Image 1 (tube, rainbow, N blue to C red):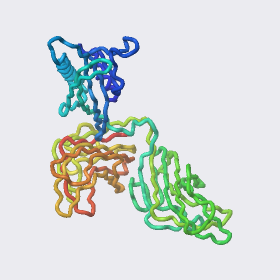
Image 2 (image 1 turned 120 degrees about the vertical axis):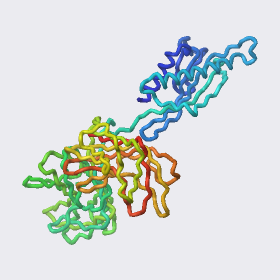
Image 3 (image 1 turned 180 degrees about the horizontal axis):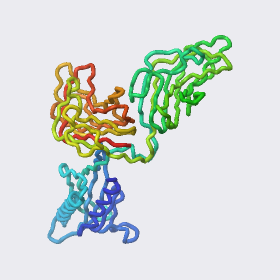
Image 4 (image 1 turned 90 degrees about the horizontal axis):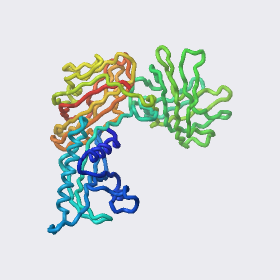
Length: 467
């Protein structure tokens, strides 16, 4: 439900109520009065309900909308009533507010979750341009509004790989020298990167981003410094193409000294097309300029290469697997109890194994992009001396072995408080899959440090979408 739809439901509830004569929405300065200047039809009709929006907040996939519901009527002096009719109006206005809440909660089949506890009622008597009395209620309404990047109205790239260089390397464009920038240490390992090459077996638009510090070595007499790197594409063509960067900043044009550090940021946007066996890309290669000798450079430790794939604008994900846990489960990354488990299969394309041992194993039957979503609640067991709580789960790819970290994460605890606190968490993983990748598991990571266990509570869900 969108915010506008929620406001319109309040408006309709006020319109359907037999006593409420007018409805307004906005800031307090927008409240109408009956005696305000202007045409008579622009003034307020009483009883008058005004909806004043206050600060809202998001808790994972749920939006908490907060409002002041102000119900008011004209205060008219009644003979024999020392309080005039203020108290009667305040009492009536409280009842009208309760009527609206009941209408919102019970009338709609997709009823928003109105927090019926913690509502505060404040009676008032004010003299604006009209002398008014009434009641103000502060309410919060919870509406499931999950964030879904797949339907966002813009193009974006989803990180598939991210690798880092841990030691300096000497590179040069001349024959016999190391020409390709290398990145051997995984930050995000999607399984297709190998030191300085990437094999893409799925068509689409890819983005390659290099952030790298370099220094220049002293050119010998007659040598020039290397030209900016290009993407070296290995193909079946007689001549492998070299593709200049889509954007490049920081590359030096002249030699200054050997200690000056250049921060190079380069991006290649490339459309993959079909080729048997996939494309092999040798990244950021220094192309030999055959017209002049060239010097070498130092690729400094700490540089990174990120490989991303463009998501199709406004694509709609298709639910292909849906599983539910109907019981609490204890997960311990230090024991053979690190896999999330689900015992009830609600929907599947036939490839989700919910057997006792590997109860979340999914094996793809074709090459496609998938989104894995696990959402639920958990508690922490008390760590023993020397133990830490488990880090948030990963998606484990079997072939080749890879640990895929969440693209989105919320609610996972970072420290132990007690054994009774319930954490509502949501983890989203996105990756390209193929039959060759074997199966995928949702699991806790067994780190080098001893770790405690967690309790995944009944009601936790596991969904897989084709995107």
